[in-house]
Image (cartoon, rainbow, N blue to C red; front, top):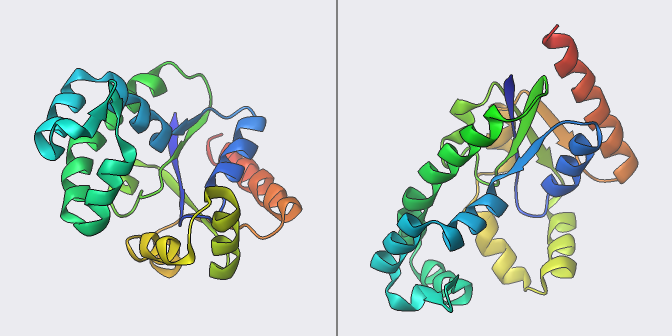
Length: 195
């Protein structure tokens, strides 16, 4: 079973693309969602995050996201330390999940697939791209955020050009119809490659 990494900058539309692969019957693992669950359920992760951020890291047994986001926003070294705690456990969780799937390939959707070196564990990589202005517009609608905050996140991610160089496939996500066609085309290529 092949592992297909799915990534793209914030607001590029990874979730839309992931849903389209799922609609084709391909199992999809959303790493960020699983990481959030593990941060609230894994005793080891909880203990280590409290050691890193202090007792305020959790409120009522749930991750205190605003508190942690504020620390990370002001000192990005904390993001690397947090990722070093969470990512290895997400990788182990993914392997268990993958072993239970029955499909020619699975999609592993990871926002920072290249930044964390995760692409090296994938057989293929798909990068989703969209013009920066469109990405910002989507995020302002979706997240009730500011342009400055979105651009700060974008600065911490690789550029599309860097990602595209290391990708097997690129999906330009500007219209839903166009994206659906690209997903279908890649899906067929994948199935043919695995025959």
